[in-house]
Length: 104
Image (cartoon, rainbow, N blue to C red; front, side, top):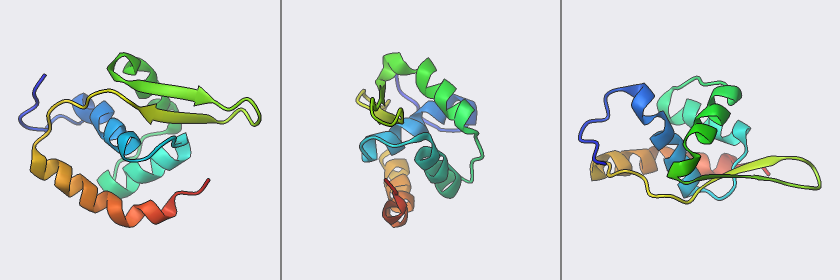
């Protein structure tokens, strides 16, 4: 699948979440929500983010639940559709200053 222009937000919600999860290992919903709001000025609830990751599990999302504290960690191990290299570079530039805000 090739996406030439990333215009429709609904169609690329999972791609944005997949990009963030692929750049980091094992993020919580709160962390994903923070990155999305800071990078894309995007206000999705944790419930909506969770629903998107569950809906696109076939694309490569993996959810792990810790047995000790029942926390869920979200991973992306699939292949993100082909995105224009400049878009990826822009997203990485936006993500770089936020990497220090990851709280375990």
